[in-house]
Image (cartoon, rainbow, N blue to C red):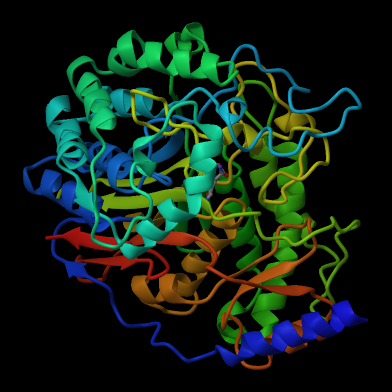
Length: 563
Ligand code: DON
């Protein structure tokens, strides 16, 4: 009784924040080229590469390395990511540089003798890290599509790390918040805690990282997976009882995959295939949405929000059962994208009443602490488009810096299903498809996406946000294609999220129109407000006159840059 009153109060309070914002106002508009990323310095690096005549892949490589310096909570060389490419002539490609489980990993590695999950082991510290994929991914992207010399693309990041850069207030706050974890989980004092308390405008210099980047600049993949960097990483593992070996590093290879695509009305969705669940889930959601009058119902009204929640409930149930690394598990991609199958998933969907997700997992649905990943979108002057989402998983990953090499290791092992039905840090459950196996890639929700409209490039978009990435990208696309918002407005607009289990709707403050939260609650939806925002997106829209509009997320320090 007290709990339901509390929920009612929260829903009611959430309505108070419903200020009408101008969701059609445009973000930065440029004539030829655009980069949108989570940090103004990284966007400036990408834009400068494009100005020098580099293509979208050149800019993507430079932005990836720059983010590893100026946005260390998610930008990385010790993590992984996905890149989706549409060349100007319409050719598509996708690069999977997701981390892999080390050879010594096994399915029960995070369980105690009673078979119970050991709290935090897959999430913090050395054992949480998968074998990093970023550097090999960037090298392979450069070999296949790069046009500028490799060293010119790594150099801007080296300069940022060696000379230092001013911290934004958000970054200073995050570094201070992580101080205790940095002390607990590191075997040597990392550069991030040399100062007791960071303030906005303080200069952060990362000398060890600068030297590691120099080795990558001079030797490519060997500069990371072999030689001094590999020695330092393996020594770090030994001190912290981690399991990544030199053989794991030497054998890591990023993989080129065929993007998943789906035609929805006039739009063709091009997105990341497994081991991401994002592309399939997004196409399922948009296909289902095409069958209902979302446009007439209006943005975030009770009709559209209820329908979207019910669609999300069904799509995330599929995710939990069917999706995993296609190199280890037979993911039925074609079947999941079959239009008849997708239609069958919404049979019985009531427009009046919330369904029940079977069992409700205990606890608050929000992740235990600030998660982090980052997305950037690029279009070059030739019309090539790149959509990249890259991550350490949670904020500052495993919290472990490789001593002497200055980079953070991911905690991506937590994206595996560590035990069937046991929720990961995003509350996601899974089973056999996503069980741990040596050399296997953990399932992801990252959804770097490109849209065509009537065969022409239309949008580049993606987001951070763990399990909420898919629903964030879904809502942004609907905001533009159904509700006529600008790219900036579509990203500014409030968001909500449902993921089957736990059976909660997370909603940003003020995301639901006046009365909507209450009406949804009366239909049987459990709604929990989400502080700190859902997702952080970066998008570029091609306007009817051929100009480009950038959408940079006001939830972070994100910035668009271009010319
Ligand atoms: O791959 C995934 O789905 C997660 N590791 C992404 C993490 C994430 O987005 C956290 N940031 N908010």
